[in-house]
Length: 352
Image (cartoon, rainbow, N blue to C red):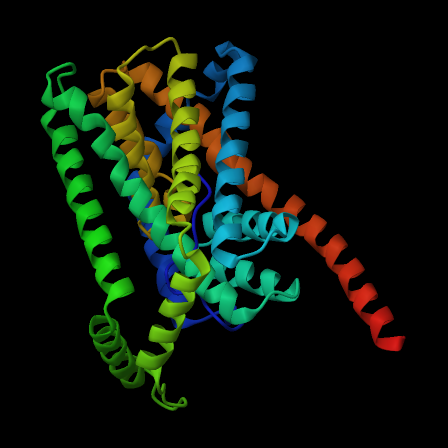
């Protein structure tokens, strides 16, 4: 799944080495040490990929491409722009960085932001647009378990207690996100109070640096910008976000069926959501190791035999994770090539 940028989009160029980065690296090393046995067990099945019909990999690649296109479509709506080449290349490059750097979401978002600014887009619109896209995408993800509720409540499928608990956690998180987002979008006092608290915290931790001022006002203005950007297009935004999540889920479902397993689709959906949530935990880059271990375990709970669950997880991650990492440098190269043309045209306009 193409990862959305975090809610807070960095506005400046981050330092290459910082104490926070060092701590994140140490945490990532420890995290990989913990999950290393599970990671080795998954990659030990790499020879078994030869027994998977190559057509399934074509299907998974097509579904992942559709997931990425849906994300670009959502970002384009939130940015109020149709510059899909710029939006797509910047998102792919930022997403790839976020998957290979410990705690890489802020770094990936910073790169995406700088590439969009370098393409000539308005910085304020970028910040508010990416924030809106991130919040909508996360809320959509947590809403996915709701689709499994009818099958569970009517007894069509019998679920393990751990999976059932995950369903209710997802439903609760979705309700909290939607209700909290509605309050922040519709009421001024909560967002100003949150901004005042955040401003005070930032000033306490920014000793020796310029104090942050008027953060509540800036948050309120950016919130209004988000509302004006989307306007009556909330339905379109939700459909585009749903496309991003659903196509990625279908890629996992295709990986499961490629191994010969045939579990209930609603149970695979719950395993998918659990895997994506594990990928959001900023311990290892892109949840490496944690996703493999967690997704394999959840697929087993969903009724997939252990050997097939391991192989399905490997096939899915080869496309969704390593494929996205490999696409990053390619997208960045295309961006640089187009950016050179933008600069030349701007220079020509300046001399005429």
